[in-house]
Length: 450
Image (cartoon, rainbow, N blue to C red; front, side, top):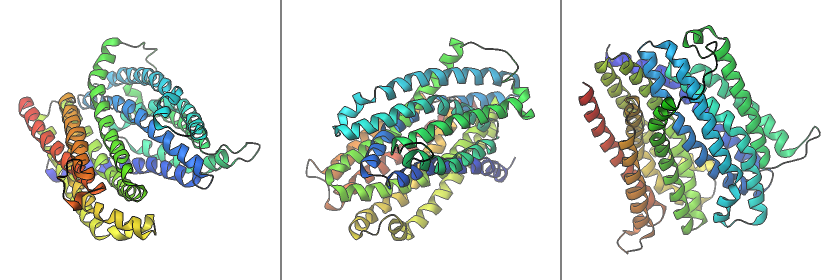
């Protein structure tokens, strides 16, 4: 099979994943936009609550990503009857992780105390997190459904459910936030109520489709009886899933801690950073989708013991992601002022954000290379060494270097890097190092398997 055909397969699998990811991001945008029209206090509580919930959810859902290479390899090996067993073990793992996550969310006042928030703000954020605890089991259960569909190259139903959930989000948010039809106005916590209801609807819809659609019957997810948790299978998933979850956690906390350090520089620096980070998050969805698609197809080829095809697919995916990231980086650089003005008319904030878009334009290449290579390594069920690379580079070089350059505690940083620019340079350099070492390690792994 030619490189062009591999590229086409990756693109065909990636576009529904991309649309679904953008729908998830849009949910957060809708929450922020609607709560900002209710009160500043509720918006602050939402921001505080989301920062904690996202850290919990990303880490736990990252553990469940172990299902992608596991099911993908079984599908490639045509061991379809074994997929149902792995899915059931994945659902048990989602249940156990939900119990852990719900405990964290229910005892959120312990974490909120570190933020030294006012009593009213802490109360609203606590209520938000405790309602979100109701959504967590359904959200993680849906991640198992999404992993199953992606691993067998059928992500369109996941996309359709995510789009349907987005359409429900606006009316349900309006009802719970502002009240009506006998309900009082809940403000920020109303977002969590809408999210919880939608999460359970998504879960039920997804698994009803698995139960009823003919394409799933040979996978034996339903109709094969009750399966208790099997600790050998759980250990196997956790052995791969824990380092994967940690790598997601490291990525998220690297950005979170960067924002906390930049907050020392004042509101203008934070605003410029926030706009840049938001644009970067949206742009990241494209390489993330390509990485998902590439990793899935590589896992299927590995399951079929076709090592040469696995290598060719990985090269095609990494190359496609790099080319698109360069094109996007150039477009963002030339359109940077228009993009920033779409966020704010404030000239001071615009002046603060403009220099940071230099890093957005360049680090897209590093980000696309590292995430695609990381997903290919996961397809080979390799995750521990990449997680160590993430920790050393993102926390050590990215945050440590950014602190030295941005805040200049030793008086060695040039003036143009003082402030948020220093942190962005540190982050960009760390992603470049991650990409370099992951690509090197992938070559080592592929030589071993060949």
